[in-house]
Length: 141
Image (tube, rainbow, N blue to C red; front, side):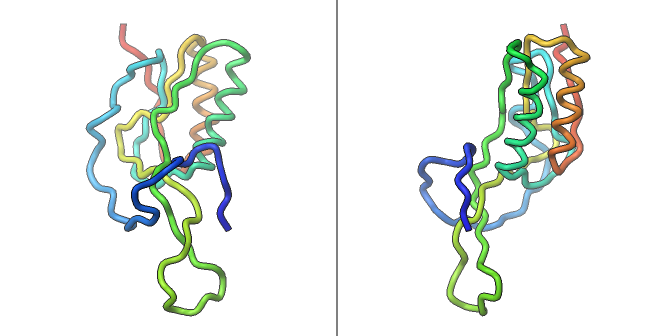
């Protein structure tokens, strides 16, 4: 069963990928570039499009027509699965959902135009929706 979500690629070069191994620490997107406050990943895990969307919606609730949100990751890695009680063989299963393989140090969200307390509260709730430990960071002036 494939569910169409907001966060999925429109077109991909290869429909099915190998699972791969996520190692090391992030070298890109480790600093705040757009907003004043950010949510930084402290672990290695796959973040699904649904988890990312749930966290984004939680943050949007706190914004109340003020501020701007940047999502710094995009789930483009397809994860396949075979149906229940399918016998061995028959090839790889169909694409089930998309994930982003996150590494420690990566900025997930950035926010601007909110007070620090409100941003901290928004990110605290959003981090509960994510499968990794996160850290609240702010821009050094």
